[in-house]
Image 1 (tube, rainbow over the protein chains, first blue to last red):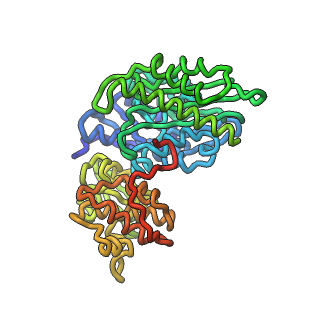
Image 2: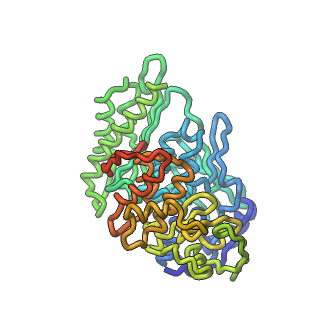
Image 3: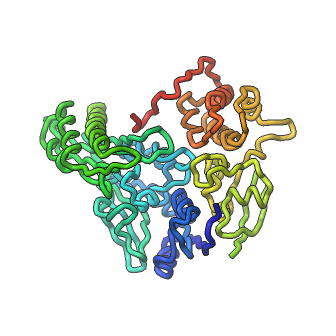
Length: 293
Length: 171
C-alpha cells in the first residue's frame, strides 16, 4: 500500500509546531507514533497535504514528576509508560492499559497523546485517565488551555481540540495514600485486539473507618465516548468495602449506566453483562491494593 | 519533496535522499535491497517487517523513512557474520522453527530484541515478546522452543500451555 504524497514537517519545538498548525489548520495532520495515522493514510480513509511530526520535540516525550502531580508528554510511548517508575507506583491503571495496547511492536511507537486524540470509545488509556481525573494540556499561538479529560471527547474520533491547537500532554495529581485503582480490558484474544469492553476503577478510603470516601468508575466501548458510571459510584459512597457491595456497583453500571450497541465484536447484552463483571473485578483489585499498603 | 537523511543500517552509516511518503520498510527493501525485511499486511498487524530501531523493535511499515534520520537500524541481514549464522538463527533451523519462512525474519528480530533486553525471559515473556509477529504456517510451538533454547538458563520442561495468563489487566 502506497502512502499518498504529503509535505513533511518536523518541528523541533512546541512553538514551531503550533505555528505550523496555525498556518495549515485542518490541511495538516499531526504525526506522533504513526500507528494509526499512517494506517489511515495508507487505506485512504483520510487524506492530508501536510504531516507535522511531533517526535523530535523533546518536551513532548518526557514524564515530569512534580511531587504532587505528574506531567506526561503527549508523545510518551506505551512502552515508556509501562517502564516508568512514577507511573508504576502511582498510576497502575494507566500502566495496565499501556501494557495491553496492541502488540509490543505497536507499544514501542504508539503514544498516549495519539491514543487520546483518536478518541476511540474502546481506547486502552482513556478510562484510566478519566478515573485519575487527568487534565489535557493544549497549546496554540493564542496561549495554553487545560481541559478535564472527561469533557475532552465529543463522539468517536472527535475531540474538543481546536483547529489551531496541539495536545502537548496530560497533568495528573498523584493520588495520596488509601487510594487504589485498576483497569481491565476484555478482548477475544490477548494481543492486537480491539476491546469488547474495558473498565477502570479508582477508590479512596477513609483511613479511620475504612469506608469509601470517593470513587470513580469509567466504562469503555459501551457508548459513543468512554463514560463515567455515576450510579455505581453512588452505591459505593460512604459504604464499607465488601464483595457484595462491589457486585452491587457492577450491577448498577451494567443496568443503569451503559448503552452499548450490538456489533461483530459482541452483543449489547454481552457487553452489559461483562461491564458488571469487570466493574466488580477492578474494584476488588483496587481494594486489595489499599489493603496491601 | 525529497529530504536528505543520515541513517546507520546494520552498523553502516549512509546518507541518502528519501521521499517524505516512503516508509522505512520500503527504504530497506527497495533502496538497500535488504529484502529480508518482509512486507505482509503493511498496516502494523503481522510483524513481518519487524526491525530494531534505536534498540526497540518496530513495524518498519509504520515508520517513515524520514523519521529514521539520525537512527540506528538493525535488520535480519545484520545478524550473521563471517563466522556464520547468529545463534538464534541456528536455533530456528535446528528446532524446525521455520516452515515457509516469511515470518522468520520478523520473528527472529523480535526474539533477538527480547533476549538482548532480558537474557532469561519466562515462558510468558517469550510468548508476549513474539505476540506482534504472526505465523500463518502455525509453527508457534517450535518458534517458542527455538527462542527458549537460547535463554541463559534454558527451561527443559517447556510448558505447552499457551493460555497461561499475563501479569496485568488481562482476564
